[in-house]
Length: 145
Image (cartoon, rainbow, N blue to C red):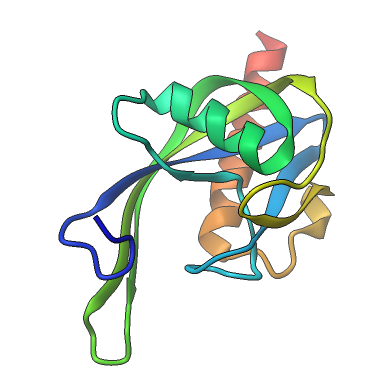
């Protein structure tokens, strides 16, 4: 199934990887969102669980090994072309993740990867910033318990 102008929504995962007061961002290398800073993630592969998918995507895009801790948000990402046709439609499950190994290195379909403080999210889509803030709050509560 083509990701552009799909016949049905595509299931995908995103990782809010938190380390202290920083969050992991990748610069998208392909459409949609090419060139924009976002969370690591992508489409699930056939036979893959959500947790397996988020681990694979983070490793492929950043070289880091992560452990998904909790679901942060489930959301639709629908992009329409100039004629109003659905060009992309993803149903995304974003996970709070913690780093358990690896070394940060941009890889596969990401153009770049970096750690960013919460005060360094200018240019990140507002819906992504909202998910990041929710995940940071969740991480703080988990740390305190």
